Image 1 (tube, rainbow, N blue to C red):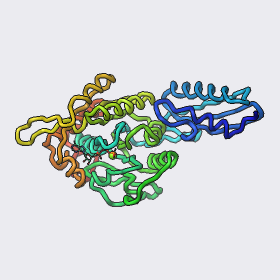
Image 2: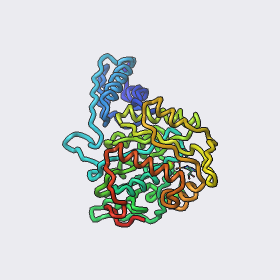
Image 3: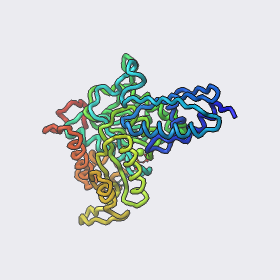
Image 4: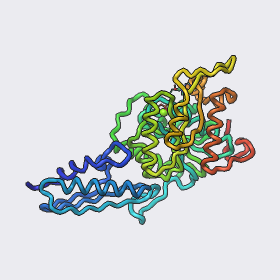
Length: 363
Ligand SMILES: Nc1ncnc2c1ncn2[C@@H]1O[C@H](COP(=O)(O)OP(=O)(O)OP(=O)(O)O)[C@@H](O)[C@H]1O
Ligand SMILES: [Mg+2]
């Protein structure tokens, strides 16, 4: 029975990228399939910082191809390049050239407070004297334009690059600026990857100490694009204390490790309710799971952020809690988490507060 190109592509759909739930065909890594009688030639190109991932893909793809009926001879070429460059070395272009450290804020499960943590961390890092950018990469539900209180449209510079807006001293780009907020976004994987790729290529961030990237939940296309295109300094995993969220946090953490991205640590959000009158802590969603999970997985524990309706109100109003009520227990926890992250990144916080630092419109 003669094998066809479609058969080969179909077979390769069973080869998953390590650590992610998606296959190498739908990610667009399979660049060429040539069938000549019973001889099959396949070229795969992927960007990864992890040589083991490439070796795993190569081994699995070869097994799958050799098992295909009608195939006698397999010629398989797996090429890799490191994140931050694209294509062959001659076309290689360093993305985010002025950015010293890129940090991803991620979670396995949705709604655990990633965007809240990302916004407050970005502002807190800025207040430590660092030049900070915040990229809302949540294609499905961008929210940073609301949380950071920034609803204008960004402008383009003379070369056509998107200029970030600035809010609370942080340079900000959100997909919320670029898509219609009232339309549901139904994007397939390759579209997600393309949109994020475009944001990584076409935003004029200028010089930043750190770019905080707010990711959609899970281990999907946005995560893959980011880890493939940009050398990440680290990932922060946000979780809530419930077992279901912790199980997903473990998956997220495992994904970043598979991609050779250092995990800076785990933040437990909505950990306990702290009574504003007496300071009593009431762990309404349980407590301590984030710390235990971090210890189990040998990742640093970065902090516990209590449940506080002021977090919701301030986020909805565009003035995150570290701005609205810096003395609130949640704000203190987020500020302390930011300090730990700055230390972990080796970014020396300036002694002076951020108002004297590089940003001009801190508020
Ligand atoms: N510590 C907290 N106390 C009370 N409410 C919180 C806290 N952290 C986040 N929230 C609220 O929980 C809701 C979800 O938070 P957020 O949007 O930050 O989560 P997310 O993980 O980014 O969600 P998604 O997965 O949809 O992107 C928001 O209404 C937010 O204000
Ligand atoms: Mg979010």
